[in-house]
Image (cartoon, rainbow, N blue to C red):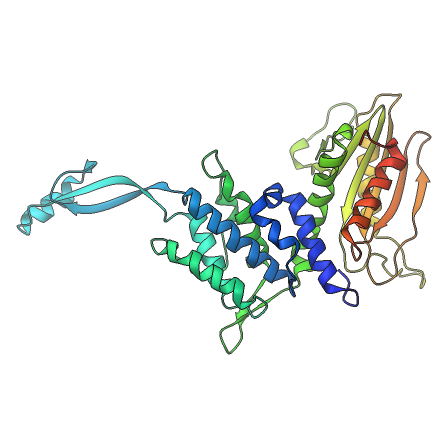
Length: 358
């Protein structure tokens, strides 16, 4: 996050955060990345993708049934009668057939191929990573390359037999969604700021998965909160859902954490020069706390947890909003040793719920 801080530390922390967001990165075949010096975040993503695709090739690339139409000497699948008649008119004895065939030419593999070929044209990717990607690409000869960087991500579905692609496809989305569409004159692409495009998701999921690992007693979760309406509500389907980032709860206490990753936290006020917190952030966490379906004895609090920036940051603060509820604001410094980052998260949980068993 810091441009003036130690970039190597920041990129290494991105890897650590990804290893929580994607538990598969904790497997032994990714261990070398902990010692590797990456100069750029996209180089880190390229290394993860190259290693992950190589592992997927060993397991076998995902195959799906695709419809085919071919003229064959023997009938296969369903006979296309009009097509067969046309063949006979042309004195071709072969039958026109329609059938399904297992193929590696599907959307999952097409996304992998498109991303790997794109990475070969990015300046920030080291030659060592590009060589590994080229080795992987040899196994994708039977897969078409998508014509553009626009991927129908919403059409990608995961089942039992392709769930190993989930992390790979998310890495591809991080890379391709951050791509600037115009090519440079030499054919290379520019990549938008990794932090601008991807870090909000990484930041939020890292915090959730960290607490799931080290504080399972707090039952960390994403939780949907229903509006606490009274009486009949018209047009309920038009009301936006409240989806929390992280909810921790134990022994009658609930902490709703809203994770925010911005380049600038405090906003200049129109009335005076005093910068203020974004009002929408406070309204959002306030709505979470006030609509939580709590028991009378339950203490429900909210916390805006901002990633610390190099600019003006809000001091830690907390406000009482009704006797048994509070709203607080804290910042999380990511420009430091990763153990220090974990220590900050531990203190948040310990201060609210007391220390865990470990």
